[in-house]
Image (cartoon, rainbow, N blue to C red; front, side):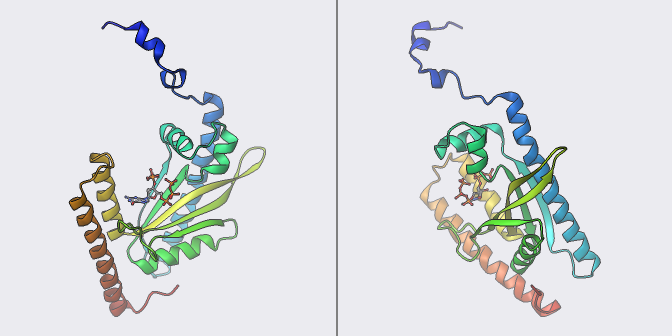
Length: 223
Ligand code: 0O2
């Protein structure tokens, strides 16, 4: 391979050397989010098991957790014009730790959300209810940002966690829509976009129908 040194010299410094966080600082920074996920994961497991034990049926189908990758964190910081300082990133980016809770029915989403946010050590910072008000493309989910304490060896820190809650039908739609966006690199053909929005409306109708059926069999879910 030959290298054209003259053209390399013209590359602006910022492009030639992508931003790198100091490794030690970054790993400690990410660690508390990992602990935050562990804490919230335990809370969700306890809720699900206890509800099942009380004979009310487990409203939670499955749970996924994820930590933002460093690449995605850096990209988001750039996108929102957040200076590359971890203190500022901590204050401005609150979805570094994320958990997705998939429930059977829409009423379960709100029941579990109420139970989780009603806990003494959980502080609700933000609610975005895309079930009550779906996005224009049809996306539905309940997004919460909660803050929970994490007990370290010498101090307690509070960690924000993004909790996305949805039904199986909403999850099915969102995962396909995400794959399509990834495949087309955001440039999704208009006909396909329309088809996806129509599918989102159908999935909302299916959720309503399943909820009605469930209520007929078991009586309405209590919140
Ligand atoms: P990842 O890896 O899934 O977390 P921002 O968080 O700043 O990007 P905003 O408006 O604050 O934007 O967040 P919002 O609306 O609460 O939604 C952010 C996350 O919700 C996204 O995370 C997706 O997971 C999900 N989401 C929101 N809208 C859609 C949608 O139209 N389709 C699908 N499939 N998912 C959606 P990220 O950032 O994409 O990444």
